Length: 63
View 1 (cartoon, rainbow, N blue to C red):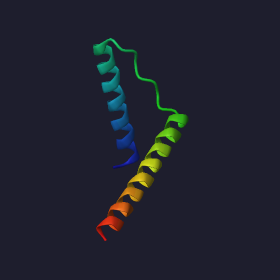
View 2 (tube, one colour; view 1 turned 90 degrees about the vertical axis):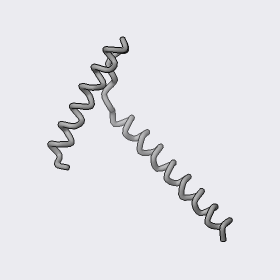
View 3 (tube, rainbow, N blue to C red; view 1 turned 135 degrees about the vertical axis):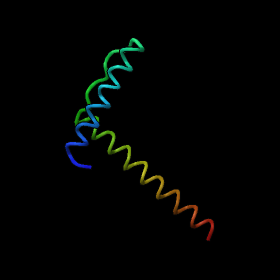
């Protein structure tokens, strides 16, 4: 997927989010910030680490 296609897809998602929120009577969603990105990446890395540890424990138990 090219960079332009990714930007177009993101714009379509934003439009949908805004319409959906408006239909539900909710405020428009906040834009994604660098802080949000950092928290998201930390959450993903933590989840990956925990999954790797869990898989290693399962493998050790299974022998």
